[in-house]
Length: 234
Length: 234
Image 1 (cartoon, rainbow over the protein chains, first blue to last red):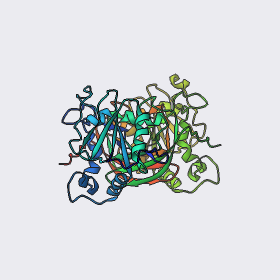
Image 2: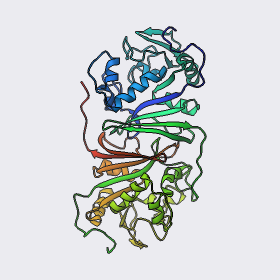
Image 3: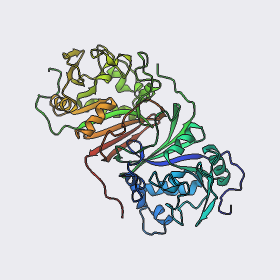
Image 4: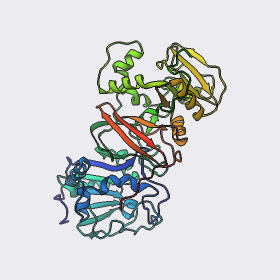
C-alpha cells in the first residue's frame, strides 16, 4: 500500500463524505446509458461545471483551466481525500450495457485521476490492481466494510464516497456518512438515475455547513445528524 | 373581482413562478398523511423555516417575528404575487384521507393568507367562493387554463404556482413556468411526495438567478430555459 496516505490504522476522526453532482430534480445520471454516453442522455451535463477547471484539467495532464470559486471547491476535495469508495457500476463506467459484466472496468483508463486507494463495492470477488497511481481494491463484504477499509487507508485524510446513488444511500442508511456535498447543476434531467430513492432512508436531519455558488453550479454541504427529529414549532 | 390586483387583461410579461419548499432529497411532503399531519410524517419540517418569520407571522395576525434574510425572501414573494395557482390537494390540505372528497376545503381556514385570487386546479366543477380577503376559483380546464386566468387576475404582478408537486410538474411540462424557486430545508425525509417525478419532464436547462442561504434553509432561484440543451464540452 505504498500509495496509501494512511498508516493502516483506522482513524475514527476521518470524515466520510458523500460528494456528488446532481441535477435540480435530484438525478445523478440521465436515461438510456450507452457506451458513448455512460451517464445516459444528458447525464454529462451534470459534470460540465468541472471540465474547464484548472484542478480538474491538471489531474488529467492539461494546462490552462479556470481558477474560479468552483475550482477552489475541487482543489479542496483533492487535498482532503485519502481514499475513495465507489460502486461497481461507477467503477465500470455508469449504468450501461456492460453493467452485467463483473470484470468490466477501464472507464477510468490506465491513469485514473484519484491517486489514492479506491475501494469498489461489488458482489463479485476480484483481485485488486494498480492503475497508474491509483490502487484499486474490490470489496465484497458491503458498504460498511468498504468504508472501514477506506478509513484505514486514508489515515488522517477524509474518505470520498463518490457514488453511485446506491452506494451513497447505503452509507446514509448504515449511518456511516458524516457529510453530504451536492454539486447542484442547473438542469432538470426529467428521467434518469435518482440520487435518493423512494424508501431509501429513515428521516435524517442535516446541518448546513456552507453554500458556495457560481453560475455553473451550487455546492451545498451538509453535516449529517442521524436520528435527529427537530421539534415542530409551537 | 374587487380583490384582484389586475385589470382582467392578460399580462404576457408576468412571471409564472413555481415557489415551493423541498427536502434535500426532493420531497415536498412526508409519507402517511393524516388529518393531524396533512403534510405527512415529518413534512412540516420542510416549512419550519418560515413559521418564526415576521412576514409570515404578520400574515397570520401575529407580532414579533424574525427579520432575517429568510424573512426578506418571504416579503419579496408577498409583494410579487398577484394571483396563486395550486392543486386541489394542496387547497384541501395535503394528500390526506380527505383527498377523495372533491368538496373538501377549509385547511386554509376562513382567512387564507393569500389575499389575492387563488385558482385551484381540479377535475370537479365547483362554485367559486371568497374567504376573508381571498377569492377562490376552481378551474376544471387544466393547468394552462388556470395559469392563464391567474395571469389575467394578477395584472402587473407575478403568479405564484404554490404546488403541489403535480401542478408544478404540469406547469413545467406545458412550458408555462418561467421560474423555479426551491426553498431547500436541511433534512432528508426518506419517503413521501416527490417534487419531480420520474418521467415528468423533458430535459430542461435552468439558469441560476440567485442563491440565498441561512442556517434554516437555502433558497435556490432559477429561470427556466425550455428546450435548452447545452453543448457538451469538447
